[in-house]
Image (tube, rainbow over all chains, first blue to last red; front, side):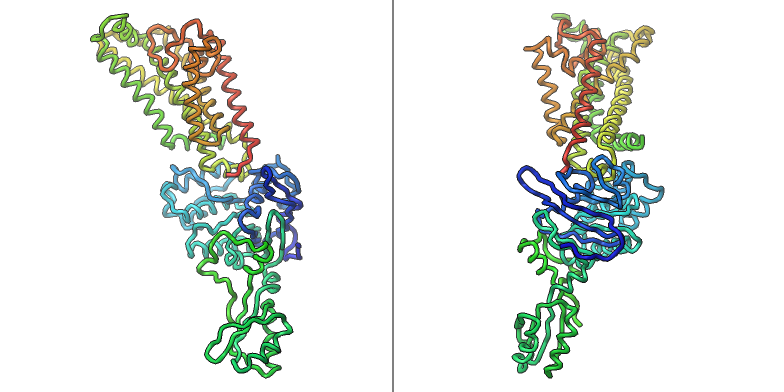
Length: 328
Length: 274
């Protein structure tokens, strides 16, 4: 299930994590290997155990079994200091509604690891809340609260950042800004662990993906490997050569017909996009010259296959993050 | 200390702090001024007018003010303690601190410490305002205020205030523990109020047991005389049902410590899923 992932060393290593709420099994022997210095996308349908995993990691709930190594140290329930190097935003961001955004960050900074002077101003600037920093949080929009929550997670300049659905409530510009910020953090050597149900978002953001279903890991892989192994290539061929093209491409598997298109027709080959060069070569060898080619890394199809067809909770992709790959 | 100072700053900005405080002080000023304005016109049946005047007569008026503050203060303290502890669960702010590696028991203890400091400052300031209100009431009633400077009373006042503070803090700790058990601000406040009034009603049926319960013990610990004081809540408690002040103080400390231990243990063991 776990494939080789890029990066040296693991920021987070989970083995056999189990958690049960009464008769409901939330985590059923979960294994995860999160490499250091990368963005790790943690995907799963509703109820798969994503938030439960996050809660265990930050000590909000206790696991029934399993081991966790965090930033190179085994985690025990009583070792709360391990969280001094971790920043987290779990579920909806939580604040004192009667305090300002700045004062809320100050309240947060009074707990856990010490926060250096000036850090709060830096973070307010980073999440574009400086102008509203003095206003009560009760007057903030959901997106503003989410941004403040991300600022809170970054307070102690953590080595490992755990974010649960960080794009919730953010507008398109906010999503792009968040993505840039998280990518920048990963570039700086931080590890970013992001749970999400927005596949398009994870696809654009994550270097490595772990997909869980029913409390178990069903696939863990580098994103490019995952996309290479999934998806399809679509080609536009002359309508009068459709039969020949279909026969030539049959070596790749089931070829599906697409809609007619102005004297041409589209064919879909269910293989990863790295195969696009082979597709063009085979068609050219058969004397068929295509007039269009699109690759689609179909994370959604793979996700549905791996999770037994369970739907993700939210609507799909962010406005600026189409599910399909770019045309070539 | 970092947490305690921050908690103090937060509580000072919290509307509930000022609403609770305003309620106590406003009611107290109103009561003493009204007594002063009406004492001489009250019919003296059953000593009503005389009793009203004795409430405003210094130095006994110091006890009247303190009795009022402890009586209504314990009720509001249980509500305030529940509001502060319960909101940590309702707003999810406890979760934030734990996720940053803060000690659960330490967090709860610091938060209660801040509540206790707010109550101490509030009690001292309210006492001062109450004394002024009683003096105004006494003047309106045509009474002399020469007893204001009575050295014996003033000498005993700090200890009485300290005992009163422990009683009010104990009530807040009870509310704090209830809200922590309920993990809810509203449930904590509701159950806290019910506990307070439940204890008052229990006086009728279990007078020998009730004296050991938190609100009765809090009042008894101050050691105020029961004649002529303006009391709220436990004013009907008979002398026979009261603990001696020092015994009551021990009982108060037991309730206070017990409530804090319950709050800390429950928080420490809690699975935070909300």
